Length: 260
Ligand code: NAD
Image (spheres, rainbow, N blue to C red):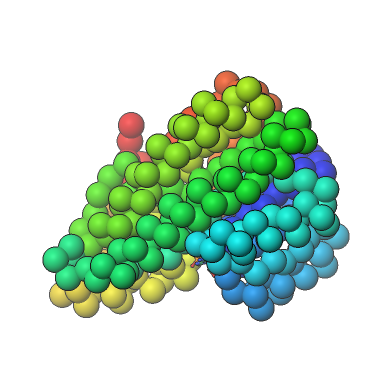
């Protein structure tokens, strides 16, 4: 098993991509911390994992709140003895044209995606460095870490920013054998995307089918959505890679929507 007894702290893992990563890592022997704003769903997901024989715990956390993040990471350390892998994945989407974007919504987006990444990284790095066993920090970026789309100013800004953070953590973490990388998925049919389809249809004045075909999947090589399993496989590769050879990178998994 690739992650035997590694402890993975995964934010936003009560749903969608994070949830899939949790189950994938558990099958590889990892101990899983489901860290999510949604307490009920976090505990239910941890219970489902435990029912498969995995070691798992749910913790309630708003990743924008420093005290809550520190407490949640401490709970994980108290239960499992440390943190080896951080997946900073919690995220939301709010779409408007720039001239109509409420400042409060802009700040909320940057707080969840960037403050959340910073606070969870800071809290986990301390434990990784102290344990001296190395570690892996993985940020959930997006094709929007590389490309822009209409209506997504704060999301695109934040997702680009995660690449900068990962590069700094890669440099600072190297001496402790802590690696940092970014996964950049194309559109994945999670609740986050299901919500956007009708919103974009309304804002752009087109049908929901047109949003899928002509907006979301237009630039892919085959008109296909990326799946949560596709993203989880990339996360597993980053998490289990043994050396600093693979650090400071961002990998796009998007059916060729973005090619670099
Ligand atoms: P999702 O809505 O299925 O899951 C997001 C989870 O994050 C939820 O469980 C939610 O409760 C949690 N969350 C939201 N705000 C939080 C907060 N402040 N603190 C803690 N938890 C919080 O979404 P998803 O599609 O699985 O998205 C996961 C990540 O993947 C996000 O960062 C998103 O930007 C990124 N992403 C998604 C897609 C896609 O197409 N779905 C593509 C590229 C990147």
